[in-house]
Image (cartoon, rainbow, N blue to C red; front, side, top):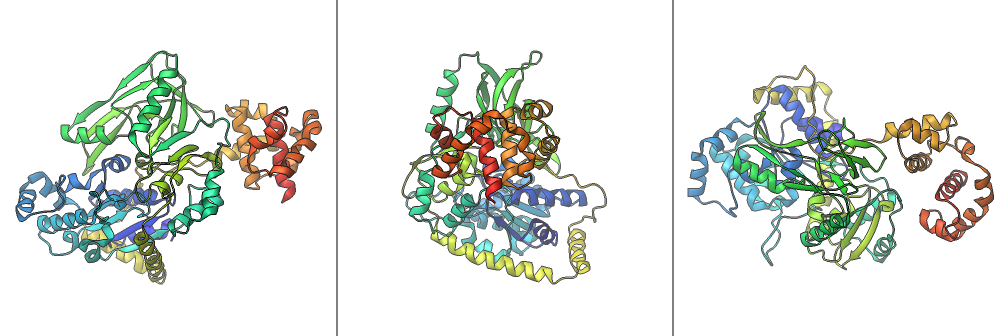
Length: 561
């Protein structure tokens, strides 16, 4: 199912489970739906299963929204106390739509409690008290935390799930991964069909193919992350700059934001520090997960200036993470959207897209950890494996079986809606808005910028392509684009991969050095293949520069097809 079909189904007001592989745009669809509802004047409650996930979408945890706290179950007295709480009562009664993100980490017992509270507070017998409920997530990702030796209580096993009769919208278009081999591996993991060839493939990922990108390390345990980041920062000789987080609003909610924000409460930086952006800012040119290096600090206000892997320099301004309800900010924290990025936990990487990563799965201990870690990168060229346990790629067989059924259910839902006339579909959507106290949107719909959509690179590639066709040299392209020469070369390789340019577009880059060394590089390609750049460079005794090797490889690939 594509995104537009899923969005049309959401707008009819039925309960929906929005799912799909990582990178298929679940958050993008949710953000579009929230914008549509808000423009129509429909009250939407945006929540998530965990604090980290809540900071991504600018909402609160579902536990806070329903005032559940850390309970595993509800007594009648608990329910009475929740109903008697004025703020909670008002919040639940005002909502028309409830969105819960990262539902894979939400226990079935919690979903049952949410259902019970909503029915009681709203005094309606319908599922969730008559709210439209939208669950978002992928059950192949991290599961709910359970006590030792207890079975996992997935949300789909709950009474509330069965009562809600969710329409499954299974997104299929891939926007993150660009590598068919990696996609094949991830899909094999989702089927529990991993074999020796897959482990061999991962064991061969011993080098990052991008020489200008310093990768982020992913570990399964916090201790390893903290050790790496502290050690690497202390190795830098530059003076330390400290940036303290500032909070506003509800103190308890502030504490939750501080605890779950990907930027630390006290951020320590130095020149040359490896950092990762922790929020989207499309206008500035970075997204949550963008890797960069601190190159300087502004002479006037002392704010850091980072250089991205594409060679762009960006001054990082403070931003805020907020808890928003009824368009009002209840609490916020302000900090630079950065964190040290030599290392990060697999848990906190969920939802990110990384240009390059070194992954250690030697201590993987839960279903989904290996899958989440590997699905963070876009290509195998951006992956280096540091360790692998025999069970790191396991997924729960129960999830595999459920996923297969969900794909069938999604196809049936899509077929049903495809048979509707557009007038009938719009009538359903208008009726839903009317029953929710809203009106059909007529003005501009402003989509929220929370979430983790990646910045599209097509425009920047297109600009490089135009200059190349004007017979500009790599140096001239880099200067005119204000990027590094190595970045310009990377653009050409991407254009070759997409067959957006031909041999004639590259011939003006050839010179005497290329002509003299081409036979040796072709010999290396014949011997080793052309998948990785570094082995070719080493085969040539490291005497032929990278640029020549790159150009010969590109021409060979175009000639070969």
